[in-house]
Length: 361
Image (tube, rainbow, N blue to C red; front, side, top):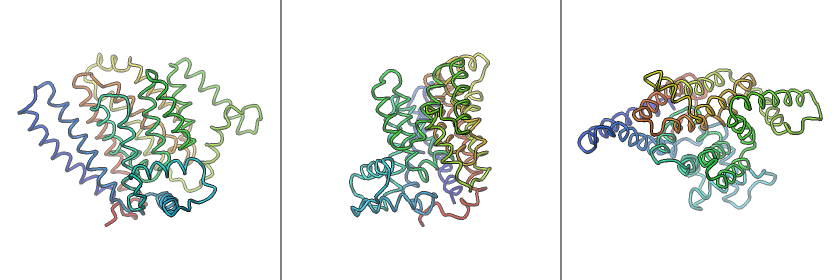
C-alpha cells in the first residue's frame, strides 16, 4: 500500500535526520546546524522517494496504463495516429529522460525523475529547490503528478520554473510557460490565475469578477465571450466525468489549506507573521489559492485545478521564507507534517489505494 511506503520513507528520513544532526553538531557552527540538517534530510527524502517511484507498480495510477500503451507504440515506431501535441511532447520528453532507452519498464522512473528534475532547474538557491522537491513528493498532489497525471505533472513542473524566473529573466519564463501550455491546456487557466494573483488585491478582485461574469455568460451560450473560451472548454471537459469522489476534493482542499496554515504556524511572533505576509510571494500565494474556491464545487475539475496551482503555492511559500533565519526550518517541518497526515489519510482511506498495490512486487 502507498501508506506503507510513506511510513517507510518517513522512518528512514527520521533516522537520516538524526544522523545528519549528529554530524552537524560536530562539524558546523550552531547557527547553521538546523538548516543544514533539514536540507540534507530533504535531499535524502528526494532520493528515497524517487527510488520507490522508480519501481512502483505499472498498475498504480488510473492513467498510467494509457500512457504506457502510447509509449510502447512510440518505442515500436507506431505511435497512435490522432494524438494531440501534448501527448507527443510528453512521450518525447519521457524518452529523452531515459536517454533514448525507450523501455516501458523505465516509464515510472523517467516520469518521476523528469517532474523533479525540471523543478530543480528553477531559479533559486539549491537548498530551496531541495526543500520544495521533497515537500512536493511527500504530498498527495505530488504523488498524483508523478504517478497518474503525466502531462499535467510535467506541465506544472515547467510552470514552477517559469514562475521562479519571472520577472527577472522573463524570456526563460515565457519559454517555459509556452512549453507548459503545450503539455497541458489547463496550464492556460493556471497562467491566467497567476497573472491575476500577481496584480495585487484590487486588480485580482476586479479581474476575478470579470472572468466570473464571462464564464457564466459563456456557459449560458453567449457568443460574446470568446476570451473565456479556453476556461469554459476546460470546465466542460472535466465536469463531463461522472465518477467523482467528494472525499478527493475535500482532501485536496485540505492540502491547499495546509500550505496556507504552515506559514502562520511557522512564525513565532506577531511581528514575524506581519513581516511574512507583507512579502509579495505570500500575497500571490493567498490570491492564487482563492481562485480554487469556486472550482472546488465542480466535480472532478475542482481537484484537478488544484493540482495545477498547489505546486505554485508551495513554491511561493517556500520562497517567502528563504533567508529568514530559523523560520524556513519550522516552515518545512510544519508543511511536511500537515501534508504527510493528509497523504496517509488518502492512502488508508481511499478504496482505490487499498486495492491497487503501489509496489511492483
